[in-house]
Amino acid sequence: MSGRILIIDDEKAIRWSLGEALKNQGYEIDDAEKGKEGISKFMEEPADLVILDLKLPDISGIEVLKQLRETDADLPVIMMTAYGEVETAVDAIKSGAYDFMLKPFQLEKMKIAIKNALENSRLKNELEGIRKKNRETYDFKNFIGKSQVMNDVFRKVTKIGESQASTILIQGDSGTGKELVARAIHESSHGTDKPFLEINCAALPETLLESELFGHEKGAFTDAKFRKKGLFELAEGGTIFLDEIGEMGITLQSRLLRVLENKTFRRVGGVKDLRVKTRIIAATNRDLLEAIKTGEFRNDLYYRLQVIPINLPSLTERKEDIPLLANHFIERFNREFKKKIGKISPEVERQLQAYPWPGNVRELKNVIERAMLLEAEDELLPEHVPVELGQELSEGHENHGAMMSGIYPMSIREMEKLLICRTLDETDGNKSKAARILGISRQTLREKTKLYSTDEDDIQVTGG
Image 1 (tube, helix red, strand yellow):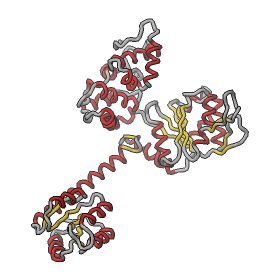
Image 2: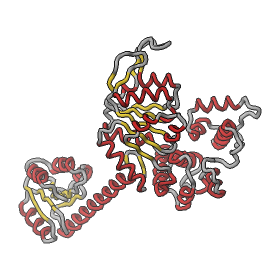
Image 3: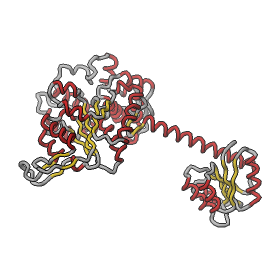
Image 4: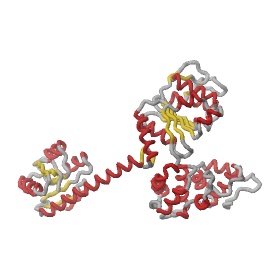
């Protein structure tokens, strides 16, 4: 046996006899007569276990126990007393004591209690070590993964976060987690104290995007009744995340380039140069080099942005992460839907790993969410996987972007209508559930169904 044990008892005979017996077992022993002395000794040199008398000359054993547990919440403490009161024992256990023994105690019983307490403590420490390693390996700032390609991303994010790099370009397919990477970099650098402001460059007209980024002066254009600060001012000391940078117009690209080169900008309609004190992270799923060739993206802006490039792998490039991700989403939706579905079976794992995942992690999340919301009760089975996924696996379509068989000749409008029909059919017309599965708001779904009800064949909840 090994381990350091501190005995706190006002009876010298007990301290000596118990100490000698435990030394013969291979333990290192220290002792104290009073409670405050025991606390002081523990602070100077922590013990692996404490044997503590309930009645002490200066302060109560319960108070000593509480102070020791404040220092080390996992410290095993065996309490002992000559007073066999049930309430006292209950108070001790409630305060965190591992065990409670009556004096005079049998030495063999004490030895067994000590052995069990130390073994329990060792197992808890080992388990926490494993959990910590798993968190570091598999769960990095909301990223799940153990693959080499993801570990490379984790290391790069950590290094960037520790650096003063002001411009970063994240490239990757849709659904690979570009925004998560941007947030991880921000949190590694600034924590949550500084602002993280994001804007989708594809979601706004160029004039409105310009105003959002740079702000505007009063009277700069019609309806500019007040001065407005843009993101470059509001994000001071923090991060601006420019999502879908590849969709930004050429004119606005020129203004952004000047910001990166000069570290200054002007509000729309302004004449005063303002300093930029923010990190800029841009992201795109486009091939920017190809966009440069077609004249849709500035060559000089590209090289300014990619001072530090991060390329995110597709899900098919990190297939070993699919079971981890699937189980992570199961845990998440178990909490959300108040279900108790276990981890995926080997059959489901093989099924998920065989699929090409054109929508990457986002698509996997949606598949798990849909299955748990509509199908699974206690276990996720192969038949709970969407029929389109099963068809893709069995038929081996070469077109990985297709989510449903037979959609190739359809227009986008027809595809959307069919998808809405099927989802409403699966949810028995429940628009809230359908909107959740489709990833749109209930209002948007209502507008879509109203729009498609004007078609020749009115939209019906039939599954088409």
